[in-house]
Length: 224
View (cartoon, rainbow, N blue to C red):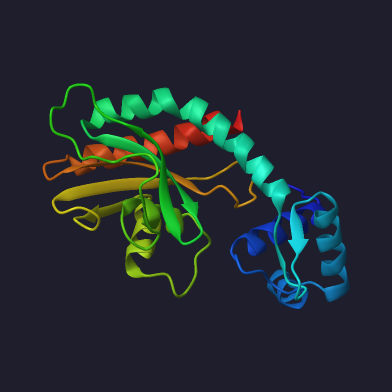
């Protein structure tokens, strides 16, 4: 399959910049992309023109308001497509189902559904946050990112398995399972995962299969 080199470089530049919240210099960006600095300046200038990146006082480049606009449109569509699927996932696994998103170094719950036939569930509210490095949701998001030699073992394991599984990391006695959702835009600006959390007794094999199916179905719906 052929690709447009300039477009590919622009998207890759956005991906690199998105992982540098404090900004990145054009020289560092050019090195990351493996291109000449002059070419990188032209890419950055084009992205600036479309309000996707901005330069701060010291000349470093970071994501700009245009990315937030695109991300908000994605969030709206994600919520619309995900709500019925998330309720079905909660009922199938008899566990609280959720969709979480990366926000800086944190993982934030953006959508939650509880099973209809279960009396005792794990409380998980929209807006709950925790470090990306802790809990099934954060680990699933990290596992969906490009592989890095410094990735901790839980992230490496989740990447191999296709899902993350944690026990008691965020709440005593709770078991969490999550899988990353890959955004069709490829911008790397809206990193999400879908998962479930329950008290001990969760059928983890059934839940893992259901969570991975939900993640792939969401990807399919968002790509349609």
